[in-house]
Length: 265
Image (cartoon, rainbow, N blue to C red; front, side):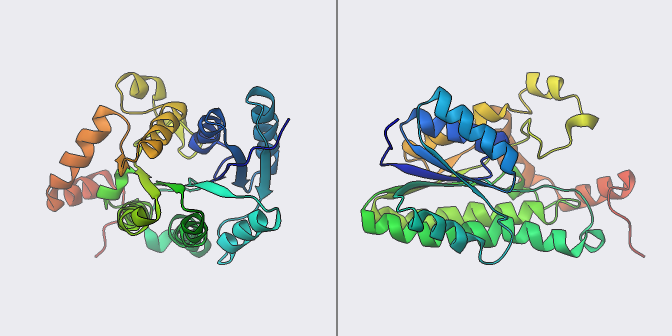
């Protein structure tokens, strides 16, 4: 197996959307640098891609929460002399709860994982792409970026950052022949969400929940077509337009009645 010259870094590569993005990029002839903190799944991904797509896969088992995580990923690629043409910021986490009741480390983790590390990865690899005169960056946001609701008061705003950051970065890097695309999926059938309490089959039939492979395919296609934003699924596209129009008091009434967030005295 010959070593491909084109490499793609994919964070959160060991499962869900990230796993399928690796497959889509392998189909396009890219060698993969798969980054995750799940070594067993990374090994399975490497074996699968090298067998099915005859591509080279480098794996980097690391925690992306620490402040120097982005630098560690960049150093890994530099030390191996790998020319990165594609960067995919997919790594993420999700939990539901009231901010003051969430463990302090989990708060720090989601802020680092969704804001600090991906922004620094864009900084480091973006500069390298500019020198090389070509590059692609795919940043994962979410349709919750337009939903600053109770219970996801950390998750949604971090995704809003990625949405706006990607748009601004796109304008900055366009002159360097680098395309930046923001992928904004809705509910996706992955381990990120606890699907044990919902009817996933029904949601998928209704178009509310998408398969990760469909989201990955849509995102990669949008990236190489030079699109600024990709929102897979008609229901999600409509949601992004209509949900922000819901009056704030309605959200507060629903929250109070369902007891999703404790009412304060």
